[in-house]
Amino acid sequence: MKKRILSGMRPTGRLHLGHYFGVLQNWVALQEDYDCFFMVADWHALTSEWKNAGAITANIRENAADWIAAGVDPEKSTVFVQSAVPEHAELALVLSCITPLGWLERVPTYKEAQQQLAEKGVDNYAFLGYPVLQAADILLYKGNVVPVGEDQLPHLELTREIVRRFHSTFACELFPEPAAKLTPTPRLMGLDGRRMSKSFGNTIDLSEELPSAEKKVKAMFTDPNRKKRSDPGNPQICNVFSFHGMLNSKERHAKIETDCRTAQIGCVECKAELAGRMLDWLRPIQERRAELLAEPGKLDRILEAGTARARQVAAQTMKEVREAVFKSR
Ligand code: SF4
Image (tube, rainbow, N blue to C red):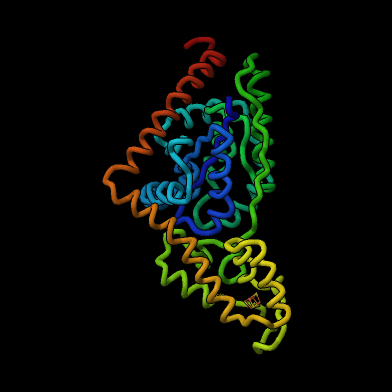
Protein backbone atom coordinates (compact mmCIF):
# COMPACT_ATOMS: atom_id res chain seq x y z
CA MET A 1 0.00 0.00 0.00
CA LYS A 2 1.25 3.46 -0.88
CA LYS A 3 2.22 5.79 1.96
CA ARG A 4 -0.05 8.78 2.38
CA ILE A 5 0.88 12.42 1.95
CA LEU A 6 -1.05 15.50 2.98
CA SER A 7 -0.10 18.90 1.67
CA GLY A 8 -1.91 22.14 1.05
CA MET A 9 -1.72 25.70 -0.19
CA ARG A 10 -3.42 28.81 1.12
CA PRO A 11 -5.65 30.42 -1.54
CA THR A 12 -4.46 33.96 -0.96
CA GLY A 13 -3.92 35.00 -4.59
CA ARG A 14 -3.01 33.91 -8.07
CA LEU A 15 -0.31 31.26 -8.28
CA HIS A 16 3.02 32.26 -9.77
CA LEU A 17 6.26 30.63 -10.85
CA GLY A 18 7.51 30.60 -7.25
CA HIS A 19 4.56 28.38 -6.28
CA TYR A 20 5.22 26.10 -9.23
CA PHE A 21 8.92 25.54 -8.62
CA GLY A 22 8.58 25.62 -4.82
CA VAL A 23 5.56 23.33 -4.41
CA LEU A 24 3.60 22.18 -7.46
CA GLN A 25 6.54 20.58 -9.24
CA ASN A 26 7.08 18.38 -6.16
CA TRP A 27 3.41 17.49 -5.89
CA VAL A 28 3.30 16.36 -9.51
CA ALA A 29 6.29 14.06 -8.88
CA LEU A 30 5.03 12.77 -5.50
CA GLN A 31 1.64 11.70 -6.82
CA GLU A 32 3.32 8.88 -8.76
CA ASP A 33 4.60 7.16 -5.60
CA TYR A 34 2.27 8.28 -2.80
CA ASP A 35 -1.44 8.39 -2.01
CA CYS A 36 -1.64 12.18 -2.08
CA PHE A 37 -4.24 14.45 -0.49
CA PHE A 38 -3.86 18.01 -1.76
CA MET A 39 -5.93 20.59 0.06
CA VAL A 40 -6.97 24.13 -0.77
CA ALA A 41 -6.29 25.45 2.73
CA ASP A 42 -8.97 28.14 2.93
CA TRP A 43 -9.29 28.01 6.72
CA HIS A 44 -5.56 28.57 7.00
CA ALA A 45 -5.94 31.57 4.70
CA LEU A 46 -8.74 32.88 6.90
CA THR A 47 -6.47 33.05 9.98
CA SER A 48 -4.63 35.98 8.39
CA GLU A 49 -7.01 37.16 5.62
CA TRP A 50 -10.20 37.33 7.69
CA LYS A 51 -10.68 41.02 6.88
CA ASN A 52 -11.03 40.12 3.20
CA ALA A 53 -12.58 36.67 3.36
CA GLY A 54 -14.49 37.08 0.07
CA ALA A 55 -11.22 37.09 -1.87
CA ILE A 56 -10.37 33.66 -0.43
CA THR A 57 -13.51 32.17 -1.97
CA ALA A 58 -12.66 33.60 -5.40
CA ASN A 59 -9.14 32.17 -5.21
CA ILE A 60 -10.21 28.60 -4.39
CA ARG A 61 -11.29 27.70 -7.93
CA GLU A 62 -8.48 29.75 -9.50
CA ASN A 63 -5.82 27.91 -7.49
CA ALA A 64 -7.33 24.47 -8.02
CA ALA A 65 -7.47 25.16 -11.79
CA ASP A 66 -3.78 26.10 -11.73
CA TRP A 67 -2.85 22.93 -9.83
CA ILE A 68 -4.56 20.71 -12.36
CA ALA A 69 -3.23 22.67 -15.32
CA ALA A 70 0.27 22.32 -13.84
CA GLY A 71 -0.03 18.54 -13.71
CA VAL A 72 -1.77 17.55 -10.47
CA ASP A 73 -3.94 14.67 -11.63
CA PRO A 74 -7.28 14.29 -9.79
CA GLU A 75 -7.39 10.66 -10.96
CA LYS A 76 -4.24 9.96 -8.96
CA SER A 77 -4.57 12.47 -6.12
CA THR A 78 -7.40 13.63 -3.89
CA VAL A 79 -7.91 17.35 -4.50
CA PHE A 80 -10.27 18.99 -2.03
CA VAL A 81 -11.24 22.15 -0.15
CA GLN A 82 -10.41 22.18 3.56
CA SER A 83 -13.54 23.99 4.80
CA ALA A 84 -15.78 21.49 2.97
CA VAL A 85 -14.48 18.85 5.40
CA PRO A 86 -15.62 20.17 8.81
CA GLU A 87 -13.75 17.37 10.60
CA HIS A 88 -10.61 19.55 10.21
CA ALA A 89 -12.09 22.07 12.64
CA GLU A 90 -13.39 19.36 14.96
CA LEU A 91 -10.04 17.58 15.25
CA ALA A 92 -8.23 20.92 15.62
CA LEU A 93 -10.44 21.69 18.62
CA VAL A 94 -9.67 18.34 20.26
CA LEU A 95 -5.92 18.76 19.62
CA SER A 96 -5.98 22.34 20.91
CA CYS A 97 -7.11 20.96 24.30
CA ILE A 98 -3.90 18.96 24.72
CA THR A 99 -1.49 21.52 23.20
CA PRO A 100 0.16 23.80 25.78
CA LEU A 101 0.29 27.46 24.79
CA GLY A 102 4.06 27.47 25.33
CA TRP A 103 4.54 25.00 22.47
CA LEU A 104 2.80 27.40 20.09
CA GLU A 105 4.54 30.53 21.35
CA ARG A 106 7.90 28.81 20.81
CA VAL A 107 7.33 28.09 17.08
CA PRO A 108 10.23 30.07 15.54
CA THR A 109 8.24 31.48 12.61
CA TYR A 110 5.33 32.73 14.75
CA LYS A 111 6.78 36.02 16.01
CA GLU A 112 8.33 36.82 12.64
CA ALA A 113 5.08 36.15 10.75
CA GLN A 114 3.13 38.15 13.32
CA GLN A 115 5.37 41.17 12.67
CA GLN A 116 5.33 40.79 8.89
CA LEU A 117 1.54 40.51 8.76
CA ALA A 118 0.78 42.96 11.58
CA GLU A 119 -1.55 45.13 9.49
CA LYS A 120 -3.77 42.10 8.82
CA GLY A 121 -4.63 41.74 12.50
CA VAL A 122 -2.87 38.45 13.21
CA ASP A 123 -2.75 38.98 16.97
CA ASN A 124 -5.72 36.62 16.98
CA TYR A 125 -6.25 33.24 18.59
CA ALA A 126 -6.51 31.35 15.26
CA PHE A 127 -3.13 32.59 14.00
CA LEU A 128 -1.38 31.37 17.12
CA GLY A 129 -3.20 28.06 16.77
CA TYR A 130 -2.28 27.68 13.09
CA PRO A 131 0.13 24.76 13.77
CA VAL A 132 -2.63 22.90 15.64
CA LEU A 133 -4.90 23.16 12.60
CA GLN A 134 -1.97 21.96 10.52
CA ALA A 135 -1.56 18.96 12.81
CA ALA A 136 -5.28 18.21 12.45
CA ASP A 137 -4.97 18.40 8.65
CA ILE A 138 -2.21 15.78 8.64
CA LEU A 139 -3.61 13.48 11.32
CA LEU A 140 -7.13 13.40 9.90
CA TYR A 141 -5.75 11.48 6.94
CA LYS A 142 -3.16 9.61 9.03
CA GLY A 143 -0.51 11.08 6.77
CA ASN A 144 2.77 9.17 6.98
CA VAL A 145 4.80 11.73 5.16
CA VAL A 146 4.67 15.51 4.81
CA PRO A 147 6.64 17.32 2.12
CA VAL A 148 8.32 20.28 3.78
CA GLY A 149 11.05 22.80 3.24
CA GLU A 150 13.68 23.16 6.03
CA ASP A 151 11.93 26.22 7.50
CA GLN A 152 8.77 24.18 8.17
CA LEU A 153 10.49 21.41 10.13
CA PRO A 154 9.58 22.93 13.55
CA HIS A 155 5.88 22.84 12.57
CA LEU A 156 6.10 19.18 11.74
CA GLU A 157 7.98 18.46 14.96
CA LEU A 158 5.10 20.08 16.81
CA THR A 159 2.66 17.73 15.06
CA ARG A 160 4.78 14.79 16.17
CA GLU A 161 4.76 16.09 19.75
CA ILE A 162 0.98 16.45 19.60
CA VAL A 163 0.67 12.85 18.37
CA ARG A 164 2.75 11.58 21.32
CA ARG A 165 0.73 13.61 23.79
CA PHE A 166 -2.56 12.41 22.27
CA HIS A 167 -1.49 8.78 22.56
CA SER A 168 -0.25 9.10 26.15
CA THR A 169 -3.27 11.16 27.28
CA PHE A 170 -5.92 8.93 25.77
CA ALA A 171 -4.04 5.62 26.04
CA CYS A 172 -4.24 4.73 22.36
CA GLU A 173 -2.11 4.39 19.23
CA LEU A 174 -4.21 6.10 16.59
CA PHE A 175 -1.91 8.13 14.41
CA PRO A 176 1.40 7.51 12.67
CA GLU A 177 4.05 10.07 13.63
CA PRO A 178 4.40 11.82 10.29
CA ALA A 179 7.89 11.95 8.84
CA ALA A 180 9.31 14.90 6.98
CA LYS A 181 10.07 14.50 3.33
CA LEU A 182 12.52 17.28 2.68
CA THR A 183 11.71 18.48 -0.77
CA PRO A 184 13.99 20.49 -3.00
CA THR A 185 12.63 24.03 -3.00
CA PRO A 186 14.81 25.95 -5.38
CA ARG A 187 14.72 29.59 -4.49
CA LEU A 188 13.31 31.41 -7.46
CA MET A 189 13.69 35.12 -6.91
CA GLY A 190 11.20 37.62 -8.22
CA LEU A 191 11.79 39.78 -11.29
CA ASP A 192 13.51 42.41 -9.13
CA GLY A 193 15.79 39.94 -7.34
CA ARG A 194 13.78 39.90 -4.09
CA ARG A 195 11.77 36.87 -2.93
CA MET A 196 9.00 36.24 -5.48
CA SER A 197 5.84 37.51 -3.87
CA LYS A 198 2.58 39.09 -4.94
CA SER A 199 3.08 41.78 -2.32
CA PHE A 200 6.32 42.91 -4.03
CA GLY A 201 4.64 42.94 -7.47
CA ASN A 202 7.56 40.94 -8.89
CA THR A 203 5.82 37.75 -10.04
CA ILE A 204 4.96 36.03 -13.27
CA ASP A 205 1.67 34.24 -12.69
CA LEU A 206 0.91 30.83 -14.16
CA SER A 207 -2.10 32.47 -15.81
CA GLU A 208 -0.20 35.60 -16.87
CA GLU A 209 -1.12 36.86 -20.36
CA LEU A 210 1.75 35.77 -22.59
CA PRO A 211 2.59 39.27 -23.95
CA SER A 212 2.77 40.50 -20.37
CA ALA A 213 5.09 37.63 -19.35
CA GLU A 214 7.33 38.40 -22.32
CA LYS A 215 7.48 42.09 -21.45
CA LYS A 216 8.34 41.32 -17.83
CA VAL A 217 11.19 38.99 -18.78
CA LYS A 218 12.64 41.52 -21.20
CA ALA A 219 12.63 44.18 -18.46
CA MET A 220 14.54 42.03 -15.94
CA PHE A 221 17.71 43.36 -14.32
CA THR A 222 20.95 41.65 -15.32
CA ASP A 223 24.54 41.81 -14.04
CA PRO A 224 24.79 45.55 -13.20
CA ASN A 225 28.53 45.59 -13.91
CA ARG A 226 28.03 44.57 -17.50
CA LYS A 227 27.84 48.01 -19.10
CA LYS A 228 28.79 47.13 -22.69
CA ARG A 229 28.06 44.08 -24.85
CA SER A 230 31.79 43.30 -24.90
CA ASP A 231 32.08 43.26 -21.05
CA PRO A 232 32.29 39.72 -19.63
CA GLY A 233 29.31 39.08 -17.33
CA ASN A 234 28.89 37.27 -14.03
CA PRO A 235 25.88 34.97 -14.32
CA GLN A 236 26.00 34.12 -10.60
CA ILE A 237 24.65 37.55 -9.74
CA CYS A 238 22.13 37.63 -12.59
CA ASN A 239 18.56 36.58 -11.97
CA VAL A 240 17.97 35.95 -15.67
CA PHE A 241 20.54 33.16 -15.39
CA SER A 242 18.64 31.56 -12.46
CA PHE A 243 15.45 31.59 -14.52
CA HIS A 244 17.31 29.88 -17.37
CA GLY A 245 18.27 27.20 -14.86
CA MET A 246 14.60 26.47 -14.13
CA LEU A 247 13.41 26.47 -17.71
CA ASN A 248 16.34 25.23 -19.80
CA SER A 249 18.29 21.98 -20.04
CA LYS A 250 21.46 21.62 -17.93
CA GLU A 251 23.57 21.71 -21.11
CA ARG A 252 22.01 24.94 -22.35
CA HIS A 253 22.30 26.49 -18.88
CA ALA A 254 26.02 25.64 -18.76
CA LYS A 255 26.55 27.05 -22.27
CA ILE A 256 24.84 30.33 -21.30
CA GLU A 257 27.18 30.58 -18.31
CA THR A 258 30.26 30.16 -20.50
CA ASP A 259 28.96 32.52 -23.18
CA CYS A 260 28.09 35.17 -20.59
CA ARG A 261 31.51 34.98 -18.92
CA THR A 262 33.25 35.33 -22.29
CA ALA A 263 30.84 37.97 -23.64
CA GLN A 264 29.73 35.64 -26.44
CA ILE A 265 26.12 36.43 -25.65
CA GLY A 266 24.56 39.82 -24.92
CA CYS A 267 21.92 40.46 -22.27
CA VAL A 268 19.25 41.49 -24.79
CA GLU A 269 19.71 38.23 -26.67
CA CYS A 270 19.89 36.22 -23.44
CA LYS A 271 16.60 37.69 -22.19
CA ALA A 272 14.92 37.20 -25.56
CA GLU A 273 15.85 33.51 -25.39
CA LEU A 274 14.49 33.28 -21.84
CA ALA A 275 11.26 34.99 -22.87
CA GLY A 276 10.82 32.43 -25.66
CA ARG A 277 11.41 29.54 -23.23
CA MET A 278 9.03 31.10 -20.73
CA LEU A 279 6.21 31.36 -23.26
CA ASP A 280 6.77 27.80 -24.50
CA TRP A 281 6.59 26.64 -20.89
CA LEU A 282 3.53 28.67 -19.91
CA ARG A 283 1.52 28.00 -23.08
CA PRO A 284 0.62 24.30 -22.45
CA ILE A 285 -0.24 25.06 -18.80
CA GLN A 286 -2.57 27.83 -19.89
CA GLU A 287 -4.10 25.66 -22.63
CA ARG A 288 -4.87 22.90 -20.11
CA ARG A 289 -6.34 25.53 -17.76
CA ALA A 290 -8.58 26.96 -20.51
CA GLU A 291 -9.70 23.47 -21.53
CA LEU A 292 -10.60 22.62 -17.93
CA LEU A 293 -12.59 25.81 -17.40
CA ALA A 294 -14.28 25.64 -20.81
CA GLU A 295 -16.28 22.57 -19.77
CA PRO A 296 -19.01 23.89 -17.46
CA GLY A 297 -18.98 22.29 -14.02
CA LYS A 298 -15.89 20.13 -14.63
CA LEU A 299 -13.70 21.76 -12.00
CA ASP A 300 -16.56 21.77 -9.49
CA ARG A 301 -17.12 18.07 -10.10
CA ILE A 302 -13.42 17.37 -9.52
CA LEU A 303 -13.48 19.29 -6.23
CA GLU A 304 -16.73 17.64 -5.14
CA ALA A 305 -15.38 14.15 -5.85
CA GLY A 306 -12.12 14.93 -4.00
CA THR A 307 -13.99 16.42 -1.07
CA ALA A 308 -16.30 13.36 -0.86
CA ARG A 309 -13.27 11.07 -0.71
CA ALA A 310 -11.53 13.27 1.87
CA ARG A 311 -14.70 13.36 4.01
CA GLN A 312 -14.96 9.58 3.99
CA VAL A 313 -11.45 9.21 5.43
CA ALA A 314 -11.89 12.16 7.81
CA ALA A 315 -15.22 10.85 9.17
CA GLN A 316 -13.67 7.45 9.97
CA THR A 317 -10.72 9.09 11.76
CA MET A 318 -13.01 11.35 13.80
CA LYS A 319 -15.08 8.32 14.82
CA GLU A 320 -11.89 6.73 16.16
CA VAL A 321 -10.88 10.00 17.85
CA ARG A 322 -14.24 10.28 19.64
CA GLU A 323 -13.95 6.68 20.76
CA ALA A 324 -10.45 7.29 22.09
CA VAL A 325 -11.26 10.58 23.81
CA PHE A 326 -14.80 10.08 25.08
CA LYS A 327 -14.78 6.27 25.09
CA SER A 328 -18.00 6.42 23.08
CA ARG A 329 -19.12 6.85 19.48
S1 SF4 B 1 24.19 37.46 -20.62
FE1 SF4 B 1 22.42 36.55 -19.62
S2 SF4 B 1 23.24 35.63 -17.78
FE2 SF4 B 1 24.79 37.06 -18.53
S3 SF4 B 1 24.41 38.95 -17.41
FE3 SF4 B 1 23.33 39.08 -19.37
S4 SF4 B 1 21.28 38.33 -18.93
FE4 SF4 B 1 22.58 37.70 -17.26
